[in-house]
Length: 435
Ligand code: GUN
Ligand code: ZN
View: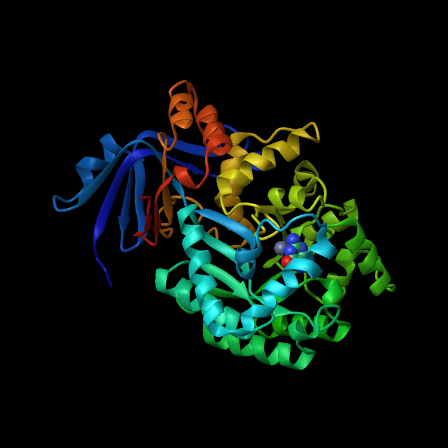
């Protein structure tokens, strides 16, 4: 065990709660000249440098950053690692996009070496964007998930992933069966779930690509292992919703399909949820399930505008997702920029404190990991990012005009991207340095 203590001096900000619940003023803690003290990979203290520096033992190294901001590591609550190589595929909405681009790309993950290469590239990309935790789709091949977890384990990242379950309505080369899907998932759960910082998610792709039999088996897995995640897509595209209602004529709504097979738990995360009715939102809230809001994907595929205030009204947990490869950026900062515009198009605002919350603590709460990550509360894992105010000439110039914390955060989210990430730390260890 590494018994070392290290300290990082910079401006520091973290989220204390959802502004919709605790109010804007109580939702953040900011130290203009702050100190983050890390011991054995965990947060030991955060506060004003002047107060904490005298408490440090003499041998503790203090790393100082100028014109920088330390924030908790970003949390991406929905992303597909096998779609890294087909990001930015032209011209289609969801169902044609899946058939024309996604399925052929995912077919290649039968090859274990390919899966390993892409997993390495994917995780490198997450870290250079400041993302330290993600909820990740694999492909139908169990090898894809082995490859992903092997690489994630090497960086000691807190990550959640699962093998896709899909036994119909896709090319033969991507189909499993209820039985093989069950066996392969079980094998992966036994191998990876709870190993180090890794967790397993039962991952039916979406209702149209699983039979009743397979959805029932997904529910059975959740019953057998109560702390597993459940990760799928929900109500993303109008044609998709119509197709689901045709495929499951006995169900009252898209969400009711998942509910019928016992897939709504406190650890269930549904990507998108754009076209949900009030009843579905209430059902999500009652079950403690979460929605991943994926603005770049929703705009890119022309899926629609996510109604965040509606989710707040019903008390649904919401995290932020990039949804690469339908999403067009790995950057959570860039994703916040697009989230703001999605709200503007609906006559709503996205306050920078809410943005900070969604990108960090809100994601942790959606994933039920807020006892471990998402803020700098004592004892949490020291996953953090150093943002550079001088990353580009324009950002540098604009940041010099900033007069308040909310303006500071808004400019970072609006102009920021991978260039803004100076360093990324996971469990107290530096896992990315720019340049
Ligand atoms: N619905 C089913 N599969 C997918 C996928 O891979 N991406 C997105 N955005 N939606 C889906
Ligand atoms: Zn997706």
